Image 1 (cartoon, one colour):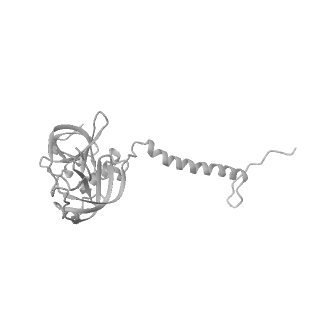
Image 2 (tube, one colour):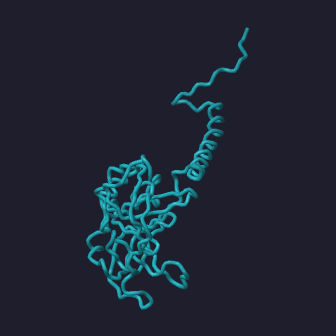
Image 3 (tube, one colour):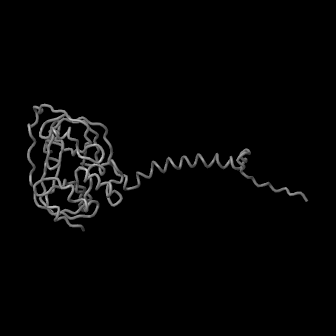
Length: 253
C-alpha cells in the first residue's frame, strides 16, 4: 500500500528553501523586528536606572568663573527673578574623566564666555568645558558674585557620586554598578556630589568640601557609591549647596 503522508521538509544549503520554512520566516522575522523595536523603546521608560538626565548639547554661556570650592560658572539669571537666587551655578569638568583644562582655569576669578557640552538632571547641571575667553562684566550684574551664606550644621545621609556621569552621561550613573567609573571620574578631577533624598522623595545635591572649603576628591574615593552619613556645615551659594566637613568624620551606614 502506497504511503500518502506528506514528506518531511529538510533545509539543505544548496537547495531552495522549503515552502514550510519560508512561510515560518515570513511571519517570524517581522514579528521579531517589531518586538525588538518595542522592547528598545519601552524598557527605558519602565526601568529606574534609565533616569531623566540628558545631554543638552553645546552651550555658550557668559558668567563669572569661580574657583572654590571647585571651579564653576556663575551665570546671572535674566529677567525678573523675584525672590529666587540672582545667579545660576554650573559645575565644570574637562573632556572625559577630568577637571577643566589649564586653558580654562587660567581665567579663574574673571568673567568669561564659556563653551561646552551641558548635561542636566533635575537641578544639577554640569558643563564639559571646551574653551573660555575673557569678557567684561555685564552692567546688570555685580562684578563679583556674593560669598556663600552659612545655613547651619546638618547630618545628612546619602551617596557620593561623580557630577558628570550621574546627570546623564552614564545610565545608570549611581550605585554599585557605577562605582568604578565614579571613582575614576572623581580621582580625575570631576566634582564629587553628595546625593540626599528626604522622606518626601525630594532629591538634594551637595558639593563636598573640607572645613576650609577645599575639594576633597582624593580623600573620599573609598566611600563612593556606599550609603554615607556626613555631619557638617552647609553653605549656600545661590542655587548651589556645599557641605563642609572633615572627610575623616564621614561614616559608612
